[in-house]
Amino acid sequence: MNDPIISINGLNKTYEGGFQALTRVDLSIQRGEIFALLGPNGAGKTTLISVVCGLVNPTEGQVVIDGFDSVTHYRQARERIGLVPQELTNEAFETVWNTVSFSRGLFGKAPDPAHIEKVLKSLALWDKRDNRLMTLSGGMKRRVLIAKALSHEPRILFLDEPTAGVDVELRRDMWEVVRGLRESGVTIILTTHYIEEAEEMADRIGVINRGEIVLVEEKAALMQKLGRKQLTLHLQTPLNELPTTLQQEALSLTANGYELVYTYDGHQDEEGHGISALLATLAREGITFKDLHTRQSSLEDIFVDLVKERA
Amino acid sequence: MNLHPVRAIYMAEMARTRRTLLQSIVSPVISTSLYFVVFGAAIGSRISEIGGVSYGAFIVPGLIMLMLLTQSVSNASFGIFFPKFSGSIYEILSAPISYLEIVIGYVGAAASKSILLGLIILGTSSFFVPLEIAHPFWMLTFLVLTAVTFSLLGFIIGIWADGFDKLQLVPLLIITPLTFLGGSFYSIDMLPPFWQTVTLANPVVYLVSGFRWSFYGISDVSVAASVAMITLFLVASLGAIAWIFRTGYRLKP
Image (tube, rainbow over all chains, first blue to last red; front, side, top):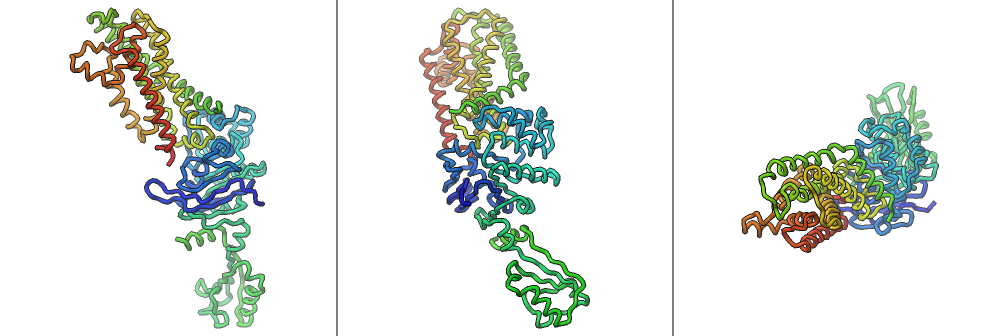
């Protein structure tokens, strides 16, 4: 699959105060994928989205959306994009129906009440259509922003921190909505610092830190490549120190000598060393254990490692 | 040009006017009526005619101008300032629309509202004083041009202002004094000779004079000068807006 719907080439952004928010960003988003952009606060996630959507002028570089340059062909480029911003911003006195219809018109589409109805129903907003925005809860306001972004049938949807401050149940609902959109062929780019979200949703993951794209990888490959596994053995009798045959970096004693922790990565196993060798050595040394468990590092650990490494 | 976005912005702005009917239509009409009562009836009865026109009738064009200027500026500035303040402007800036379309939507709505108000006040004043309109075409032309020009100015102020205080600053410190000193309530011949010269530097003098001429055929300055001045304003405002959008001033970092 090499059919990018968004190509970002050599993007630099230096704000007026001299702060460099983006440094030589190159990124391609494939048609129909869910791409998660991860990064700590202030890493440049929102700036990157803002440049693509035309809210921030790039200092250097080019963004091509579905074959259209985002500056010279901004009409064609932007009508393909729906943006759900991070902040809950809206016109407090408008009704849900009016504000969503307004968005459709603003994006140059003829009124289509049937489509607006469909969008509102899919986001469980239909019953609230005549309510003023100021009377809605935070989660509902977030959904209204999504409805506004979907009102003009975009091919690309940007979700900037879509589930920040949203309760667990609503977050799951939103994931369902996003999956449904992907089914219908919409490309989705979401930024988040909830790793769980990226792990749950994304096909590919990009990590941005200090304005630079640190890594872009298929989620599964990333997990496998960088995911570390840990085997913890709960020992029958505590050890004061490791026998010399077991002196190696991957092994450590914790919990006052009651636990032996073995850290390894995905491929060590396949080579036949690793766990089986360790267990054989333990048996030779007469070390017995009563229980064991393994743990696979989450994307969160991977992410923290990556960001720390470059800090 | 795509008409859907222009229509969406225009209708949303007009809906805002309807929601705030009391503040946006009723209150200017009441305050203008108060001017008629105080200046026209109470004080005006002691002032002799000016150029053959009773004082009450003389101030009608000036009062309409006064209202037109202040309301155009405040409507248009608030219309663009509020989305900027609430953050919802992201949607307008990310929409596939040209700057021209944004300006037509916002400024068109603000100007429509001012023109409507001007006509309502004109109607109201006919209850207080006998009115005649010598040049209806020019009256409407001045009305529309002034509403559009000062709505453009308001739009610029709304983009420039980064707080509610600044939003009030220009109308309060510049527009209102210039209008009061711009011959709304007097003919500039009534001033001492020195101030007659100084007052010619006030652009509002030309607007009021031209507008009054379209009613009664009397003017302080030549009609050509009035038309030139309003055109100059219009071009200057359009230039400023073109610059704002080209550079992204206060809109796009």
